[in-house]
Image 1 (tube, one colour):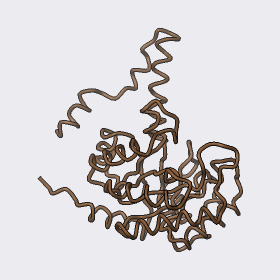
Image 2 (cartoon, one colour; image 1 turned 90 degrees about the vertical axis):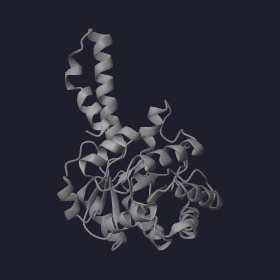
Image 3 (cartoon, one colour; image 1 turned 30 degrees about the vertical axis):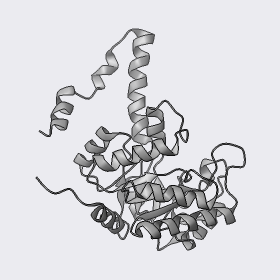
Image 4 (cartoon, one colour; image 1 turned 30 degrees about the horizontal axis):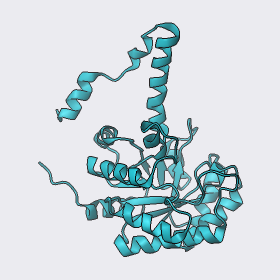
Length: 276
């Protein structure tokens, strides 16, 4: 039996992935999906706040810090791959609170974590830039105090909160880069022009791209644009929910079991989880 990688080894592997090339960071939402994604040959994984929240009958960003930390630790324990935590907005508005939450997240054994620059709810959701920068600096200090090898990703949520302003997003990302973020992320951008503008704005630091559903681009296309890391976000969880909804609605609406034809097969999954 091969030895499981240590936390230090996972963090070194994850950091190396950001130095060259392009990799896909799929998002499991429980132990089973994490184990299965690892078996397919992915090189790292990330949690999904939405996927986990839905599994708990909660909306995205509607789960407590304590529950999220337990979930992150469970995913880290389930896989030999490095795990990046979708850590929402750090579960605090003030920089000191962000630092405390980040410290707790790092203790789960993650290889990386991302911090958003928006509040949960309300109409004026983006933090003012000066406060947003201080939050990134606080996260950076917390990472350095715990283990500087953990990848800190800073997110500009402009396109996600109704401010689809590319100049605003790139201004924020440059500021977060200067504040110490290792990787930059503007979820919601989709066009080639937007993607290439973000990559250029923060070069040579790596950019994470959230793939929309569906996407007109392949992994190769995005790599050619300079994207270093590609996330699926809640995409895989939503794919599972889509199959579940279609099958359940078919039963109630038509009395038909036809969607079950697309089901995964129990013998295959049983064999997989037995390690056969």
